[in-house]
Length: 131
Picture 1 (cartoon, rainbow, N blue to C red):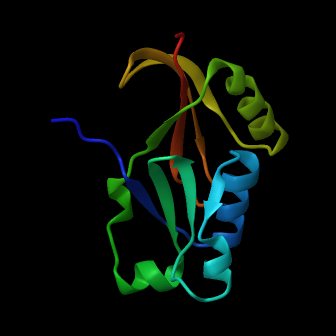
Picture 2: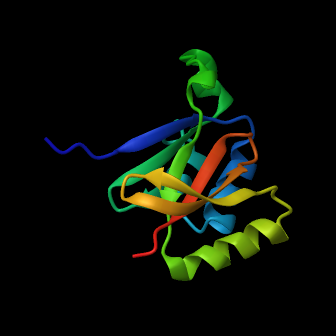
């Protein structure tokens, strides 16, 4: 059996800053953002890739259906070697504190990773593999 990730849900405090961070700084495509702003859907998402999204639950959603936030340690995103420095440069320009880089194990073996927070303090891992 092969299982792939469909989505991650983040409880956010300030959806505007989170949308800006994920779409502008990390260059993810917004998903349902216009419908969210029009009040047609309860939350926006950003697209991690063609098969995976990150849902951004605003306070009205996570207060209605609370989940224990401490259970999310971090999630990892992979970029190509060519995009690695571009993302690092944008994080530096935004004043985002970066932990790393260091070699760590991932789904495809050893890779170089950095860790950093998003505006709500969720810990993100950004990884590049040599191949």
